[in-house]
Image (cartoon, rainbow, N blue to C red):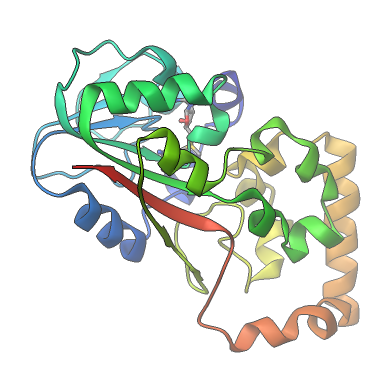
Length: 245
Ligand SMILES: C[S@@+](CC[C@H](N)C(=O)[O-])C[C@H]1O[C@@H](n2cnc3c(N)ncnc32)[C@H](O)[C@@H]1O
């Protein structure tokens, strides 16, 4: 959470819910009450039913829009709710930040009948031109090694794992969002809303950004990655895990 107190400013504008992912999450949640854990500014929270958000970063909580669901200052590892208090628990791009992932997943299962977790499989996630050619240091960050989606499903007592290929026009500015728009990563604001880039040392970021800028100018980026531009969506390792009843 300390990371988000440091980097969270501006998150709300660059990390807007992508409608295609929102539809998948909405369908997976089903009807009933929802506890949104690691809720951030409220992306992907349903607005048509009772929702309680859990978010440990004050900076993130302060950016929740007026009228959004009530938010509790707590961590996934110790949810302040009774057993079975919710029909569903939601956790979007947050498990990799948890200090004790097993405890947090246990808590999701304890407080809800159904769990919906949007996460990434590290191997496919790190197999990205941005990491490989410009910021390989990302692979060493603690948040780059979450459990696999299959392991998360198993921790939750078994469930479905569905891939979410990242659309070329993804509007939720996470690490892979601009895979087809490489110049976006030259923007410090864009980088600031991506925790993996925001955690790197300034000198590492400056070196990677300069190399990317040079490769875009020389055509080297296009030579290496131009084949991707024909794809409507690519596999960035993102997975939707749906567990429980
Ligand atoms: C990438 S943001 C995702 C926010 C939101 N779910 C979204 O999709 O926009 C990760 C969030 O997890 C929160 N977080 C970090 N550690 C946490 C923990 N132990 N328990 C719950 N949330 C945590 C951060 O403060 C941050 O808001």
